[in-house]
Length: 214
Image (cartoon, rainbow, N blue to C red; front, top):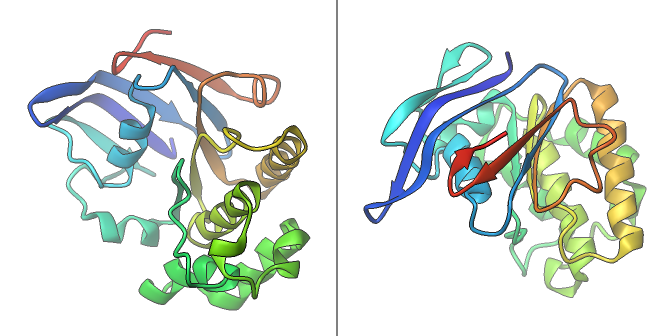
């Protein structure tokens, strides 16, 4: 199993956010985590990335226990994260934003990573020298996906990739994610509805009030 969460409990400021949460993502699988806003999807992803520490339970990545592993060490395992709000550095160019994971992690090869991203999304090559602050919301989503791919050679965590973008771009993102499945990456997508991945997801988890209900 590429990623497994077992009985995860997370409190934020003494408030329970995740409750006994268990889920799995197999090698090469696409898994959807579906729930309304505030259900706990983003906290789940932040916990996987080590940005939020669980009070109980354990996490394993490729059978390695990572529950207490420092956040900065997780991308080195091949995990890439695309946050819902993109978190691009406005004054950096598209290419510089995508290279950020490689700048802080020498194990990530820059040019092969860029070659893969530009081959997958040629539109990013055409805007690589534009500063992130000049991009539209949809273009920022593509750049944030490119940055996640720079680190995410084995597992991609995509938080609401389709939210707030035009239908044409949402379809493009779906196409890119479908192509990524052939690269044998495992993919976990958090979303409010299933419309974009229902036909291709290997597994779907529904989360309510911090707990998996189906």
